[in-house]
Each structure stands twice: as structure tokens, then as C-alpha cells.
Image (tube, rainbow, N blue to C red; front, side, top):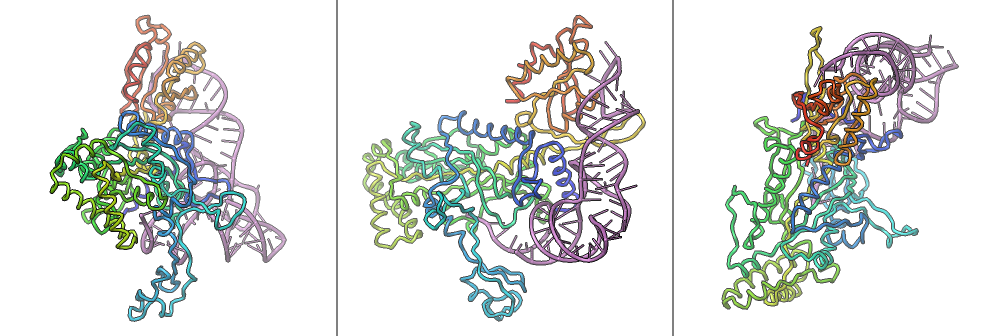
Length: 539
RNA sequence: GCGGGCGUAGUUCAAUGGUAGAACGGCAGUUUUCCAAACUGCUCACGAGGGUUCGAUUCCCUCCGCCCGCUCCA
């Protein structure tokens, strides 16, 4: 349970975000709209920084990941293949008497919570008509609004990656194992948007689909599949990694990313999904959690955390579904596999063939393909191994941008208490963002506003830094007030131009004061060294 | 979707069936010297609609939104 003190922190954070222009309610002047939020000037910078850091880390700084930017509205067939159309269209019935909600097609089989002797269909509770609960936003493509023109706003960005898998493979000069990354909006008509921007109806995702060889293929090529030790640190991908090693590697990579933007290990939590929680096609899923003020506590009173990102091992389910629904092959050709297969002993070939066949057949049967057809198709798939063909498996690290923004805000929030000369204490907010994500990197200010030489010099300093980073020039009010304002925005450094900068003490000419947000420490630095001092700290 | 609580300047809070007030913030100014200094001036609000009433921010209803619990969560 989150207690009232935790709620107080959230309330303060929410009002700070509005006051300083991080987050506004969408459509506020019309009374707002539930589940939608806008980012103000500081929030837009923060979000941009987060997305750019993710993109850089996941694509540009690696040679095994390519990027993609797909449309939000796609062929509705995609959502049939992914399962979203079927999963979300269950008609539900609410009981106004017992407040229960039941699937309309199951009311004859579920007993009434208040009168367990009777089924829901027979009890005397006042019930609503069956209502469809599809969590996908619907629209129409083209001017005619009928069944044939129905389309959906994507409920996740991942499916576009699968749908464009072959195009990216052919144009990026990548070979399995490799990944496709995408950042973009997704939409879910959530029953209950909650916890500020944590669960919204319009949100942004950062998703990687990392395609790997099936374990059978790794075994055929390398002779074995490396089994990672449970806590072993994996940083350097190896050819003999199977899905378990790749999964462990990506969990660790993602944790390293979060640590690199200021979320320490103590603020994070993990949830390893149990077999019962896993989707039927998934082999593993590890959630990375952040301990929010509103998070529930476990029996020891420790915050458990809420999901920032899920790293799922999804087998070849997604590509297989799209192969089946589109009729287009989603397999890859692997020269290494073909060469290795010919060198395998016959019993080894048979053994690997059989396991691949069983996996394929299992998938097909679970997908509703009839036994005969499933056997035939699985045989064909397994025969492909000898020709160097297989359908890649996938590891999916899928993160929510807005959840991460909220985590960064909650993590950064702190209060400093100042006591003035009269002994009056006053508390003020300091957002301790990591410099890499901070919306404003440097506040530039003349010590006084009414001295044109100071102002001109400070503007020159601003112009020196501006091509490289987001800076904010401020000459309004006392210097202390301006520092405090920057603290509240989370700006890690302030640069102040004073009379010594102008040469009042000749030995200090062209030096400035650097003031640190955390602790208020000050140091003096030559203007010529300023850029090279700041840049490494914000990159 | 259900139940409960709530809705007054940007923020935090007052007051009132009869002209809506403060603090902080913001903006402009005065100030030669570094952590929301002081002083002056200015800006900004009753969530929306309907009803009762001579008159509603106040009472009633509906809607919208926020918070809490349930429900949901591919």
C-alpha cells in the first residue's frame, strides 16, 4: 500500500511539473481529457533527451541494430495476425448489484460472487447489456465509414518491425543476429488511466526487436549452445549464444542504460514472469521496475516498483504469425547454417531436425492449424535447416518513454531547506537530473542586469555554448533567485559572468564562475576551457 | 465501468446566497558583486452547462477532470 506521505510526494511532483512547464493536462482549457497529457517546454526537452539517448545507445553506437520509423495506422490485418483484434473484442457484462464484471460468453459457467450456489446468468443481480471492450482505438481510412474501411491506431510499435522485417533485412546489410529499433507513439483505450502519466491512453514506446538464431541453428553451427550462469555478467555477444544468453544480455544492457541516466540499482526492481504469467509462446520475460512513490509495498514494507520495460523472449511467434497471415515467407537464409549442416553426422542432424520440427509443430497446433496440415508445414520448416533456412527468434526489450520520464522526475525530486539570516527556514525543490537527461544543461547569467558590459559578455557566453547544448539565459532578479529557478528546472550547471570576467582583477579576465546544482559548490574556469569541461558531462 | 473524496489566480490556501482575498511565483523597475534579499508597480481564478432564486463561486442536477479503492491490464 502506498501511504499518504507517498501521495504527498506525487502531489508535489504533479504541481511542480505544471508550474515549471514539464507536463500539462491535455486540452486543459476545455476541462481536460482523461488519459492524455502534454509535455511543456522543459518536458519536451527532457523527453527528447531520453529518446535520443535510447536511440544512440541502441542503434548508432552498435553495429548490429538498424532503425525504423513506421506509420501509426497500418493494415488492420496486422492486428489480426498479432492477436490484438481477437483478444480485445470480448463482450463483457457488468453486474450493478455485486459490481462484478464477467465475460458475456461465460456467465453460464461462473458462479455469482454473492450467491455462489447460482451462476451469474441466473442470479438476481441487475446486469448491463453485453458491451465490447476493445482496447484499440478505431478509425476509418478513406471517406466511407463502413466495416471495410476500419483501421486501428497501433497499440504497440513492435508489430511494424515484424511486418517490415524482410525489407530491413534486405536493405540494412545486416545478418541474424541483429535488431530493429523503433521509437514512436502507441495508443490503448485503457479502462482506467492512472498514476499521472504512468498509464496513459496515448503514449510513446522505445522498442527493440532483436532477431536471433533458434537454439537448434546455433547448435548446428557451433556444436553447442552456451548456457549462461545465472548472475553472470554478459557484455560481449558470442556466436554460440542461444535465446537464454541473449535474453540475459539484454536485461543487463537495459539496466546499464538506466544506470547511465541516473537511476541507481536501488531504485530499480525486477519481476521475472512465472510460467503462468507468460504468454503461451513466450519463453521468458523479465520486467525492469522503478520504485515510484505510488508503488505498492511487499510484506516487508519495501516498495516493489512498477514496470518501466519488459524484456521478453518471444520465440518465433511473431514472424510466424505474419508469415501465416500474409502468406509471405518470413524465414532467412543463412550460409553458415547450410555449410555447417552438411558437416553434421546423420544422427546429430536427425536429433536437431526433430527438435526444430516439434517446436514448429507445437506453434502451428496452438495456433489452430489442423494436425495434418501442421505436421506437413513443420516437416517443410525443418527440412529448410539443411538448405540454411529458418525463422528467427526474437528478444524484445520494450520500454515506455513516458513511464521513464516519470521515473526520472520522481528520482530527481528533492527538497533543500535554506535558513536565512533571520533564522527563517524555507524549503525549495531541486530536481537532481543526471546531466545527460537534464532539459537545460547550463544556465547563463550576468551577475547584474543593469550593467551593459556584463550583459553583453553573458550573451556572448550563451552564444558560445548554444550550438552544443540547450542553454538558458537569465538576467531577471537576484542571482540567488536565478540559481534557485535553475535548481527547480534541474539544470546541473550555472555559469555566471561578473566584473572579474571583464578584467577588474586582470588575472581573472575571461574566467567565469561555475555553480553546481548539487551542493552549490562554485569554481572558476577560463572561458576557453568551458566547452571542453561541460561536454563530457552531458554526453 | 462501479463506489468514495475533491474541483477558487501559475502554485498553495482563505472567505461569502449580494464588489472574491492572501502568500509564494511570474512580469517591469531601483540595487557594484553569488544562493528564492528589500522596496515599488503590474498580471492572473470561482472546471463546464443547466436549474432554484430578485441575485449562485456558495444550494440542487448533469457533464468534464483529479485523487483513493475495486475492476481491467494483449
